[in-house]
Image 1: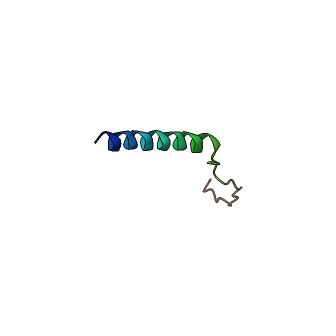
Image 2: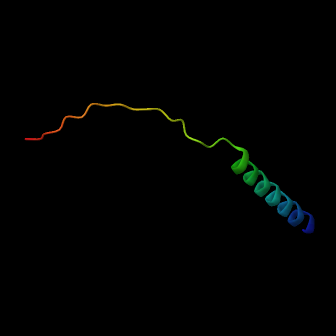
Image 3: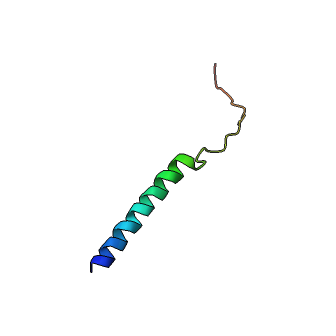
Length: 44
């Protein structure tokens, strides 16, 4: 039972380190593009 608990703790730690590494090193910026659309105003 102790081996399973140690393996689970190790996997949790490795997962946390991988998540933090991806958050800092991963390219999570959205693609940006300019959008132009004509607008009709009803000004009397």
